[in-house]
Length: 306
View 1 (cartoon, helix red, strand yellow):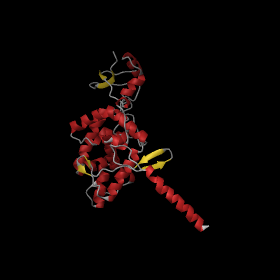
View 2: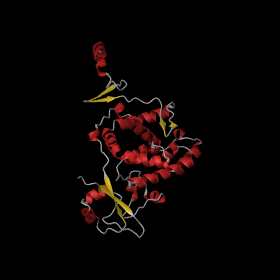
View 3: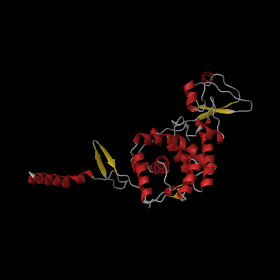
View 4: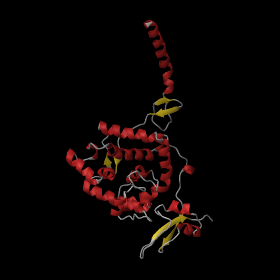
């Protein structure tokens, strides 16, 4: 019986050696050869790690095996989380120009647009179970601290431009206290005091040497992975034609200096319905808008096609 089993094993091995090369081939000429792993009717490819990498001009120490493997993990997670990454790439066409403009204006590195992406997936109405809301996922107390209005009628965490300015203020303050943009990014997740305490207790000076909780430990690496994939989408087999992207809308601005008792009626007067009004102004959280003396709000709506 044993000799028979060894004979069968020998035949199987010979077949595998003969035909296995057929299952290893490059995906495309522009991409370095990838190893295919059979998964039913799907084909999965080995992700190629960059040889060096930076975040906000600060070197990522990929020579550290722990850092390398953590980055590698997030590249796999996001390059194979197809529905998520494709939708982010679609939304990026609409929103990144706005984020890039404000980041540059405020002197905050452009790479922080990827932090915004991992926070909300570029969804204006994103809300976490803990109550953090909007593009930059502010908690209400932090939002108020950085100048955003949060009331029953108005919640500026959902106002992309205003929330981005507030996020810039937070990040610059965190960088001033912690000394690096990478630590400032980690502080956006854990808080400045939490990062300061970790640095002090563990007697280290940078994010990559810190032992952190699971969420913050992965946080910066998720940013790095999205940066790599969005900079080189074809390398990770994401190819979207221009007509599939979500393009920016041409909008007109309406200055509001008086209270609006019924936003549905206001929308109709502007030639739109209530749903469209709320789509373009998610910071309006009620069916009315009370405007105090001296205040001005800007409501945006699409320009009507001629």
